[in-house]
Amino acid sequence: MDKVLAVGIDVSKASLDVCVLFSKEELHKVYKNNAKGIVKIIKYLNNVGHTNKFRIVMESTGRYHLLAALMLYENSFDVRVINPLIAKRYYSSFVRKVKTDKADPEY
Image (cartoon, rainbow, N blue to C red; front, side, top):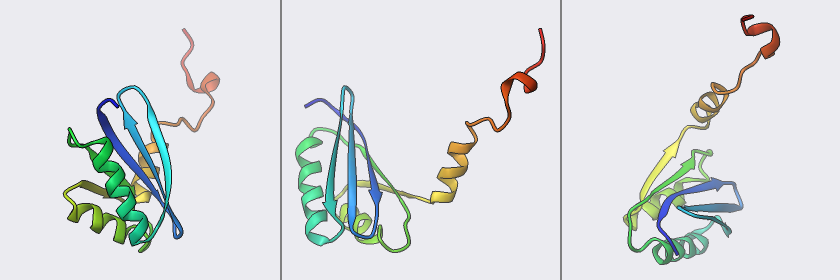
């Protein structure tokens, strides 16, 4: 496998959807959101990314992200928990809310 660039984890009450972005492909796996599932994630990430450091990003979702963030951090992963409201504002700042035909100047 090639170099891991980043890892994103989508958190819900029951599951953790893990997407690993490599330089040439991406892999997606789903784990249970409990200690056993998180241990499996740690083993998987140690396997695929043992030669390089990478960042893990997950959204803050009530309390459902806490155990995963803590366990990953305790296993020396670079974990970043982001506020979903800030992420939504960042994403929506790239989307124009007006039609281009009336908003663009005529040339």
